[in-house]
Length: 114
Image (cartoon, rainbow, N blue to C red; front, top):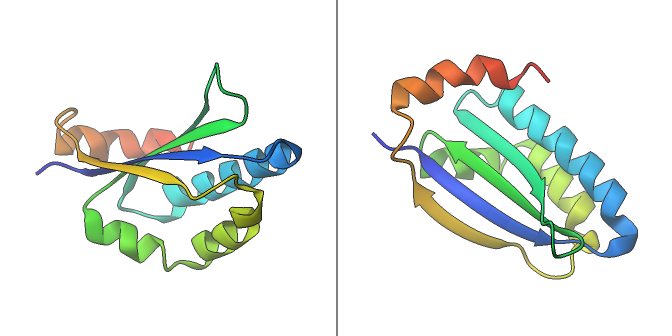
């Protein structure tokens, strides 16, 4: 069964760049460490557009995302960064085709070794 993916684009006000990065890294670490059905959480920055960031997340299924959005850490993160954003986040939703379900599960332990 394919996993559920979200690719989120976030444009951050320049004066909040560093705070955004720190808060989002911390939230990402909690996602992969404490959310057993979160298989990936990548944070990257656009090379050509200043203060545009991308978060790539992979979950077991769509319902998992809704459960995560109700967690204390996500609610705190969203409240903290919402005023730092230039506008609403843009989300692209998709399903994985590679790696396999077994591959995602086997990768998970390595994600917490940062």
